[in-house]
Image 1: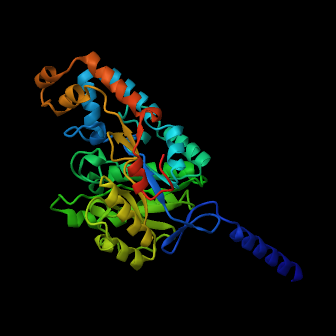
Image 2: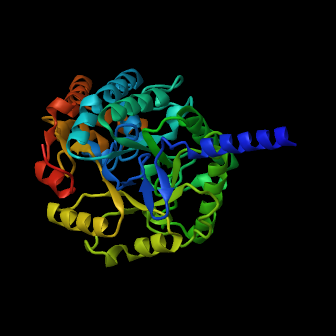
Image 3: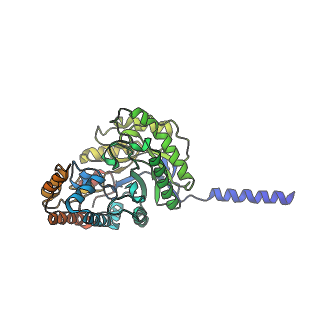
Length: 410
């Protein structure tokens, strides 16, 4: 009996010792995020938008606004071979270690990385049709963030089938994800593969499952809204089979602004919610729904996207978010012109050639031929855009950076 009691005692001590091991990961603790050292993490940072999920307006385009449209426009102008060359060069140069070092130097502690699900498939995307480089790109950012002390949020900005029903999801005008079993299975599979690869990586703060799901345009939006939480639960279950370490971030419907469809916030012990806000008054009342939902769930609320406003508005709203314990990452870090941390100079004649072609009617082969610009001039401008997007050629937007509430400007 004594030997039995001894072994029971030893087993208990081992269990206690394991439980007492400090976590290497950021964790949810009530309405706060807590770092491995036990101190609170208040998210402040920016988004690496446009890099792995191109958006037309960040190229100075309007009508041509989703990744597949931009890709098609380039192929129509200069052919698929040069389009692939352009995208590979774009990915290599648009975001580099220097960009991450700059973000960290401004006092940020977190970067949100939007990405397209196609980076983990064999679909035609950004110059590749097989052997996609999604993991290689994320691995690079993980390394850069580790060396600069930044946390990283992985944001699936474009989901299989489309989760929003607008240009931002790189889909076809409807949130097919919620009605397609094939798309949902692929959605779960990709997140499970991502979680399996990064399950032991403490630089990654968490996984944001789907950006801005279910736009308000659709007559059946009420039915679609009810499908959001069940899909989140399904994906979380898949992730937890391989990764119990990372926070999982859940965005609300209608541009991450509605949370009324969520009824269960205890199905997992390491989840939080994320909201977005563009415009409106820079007051606490303007985000009262977010604050009230945070208080009701007693879980963190994080402003994943905010920006594109005056510096004065942004500075006021940063103060409101800090007073109400809502961390934030501004959108975006870099784009053509300004309203970002780093402005990309617009290439000379960009509007006359690239933008003009992007706006032209190209619904038939005849219209393509008639609208097609000089190919060499078009190629030169695309390469100049890539060159201008390199860190050393961008222009820090000092007043904008100050308005973000970070430590200092460049």
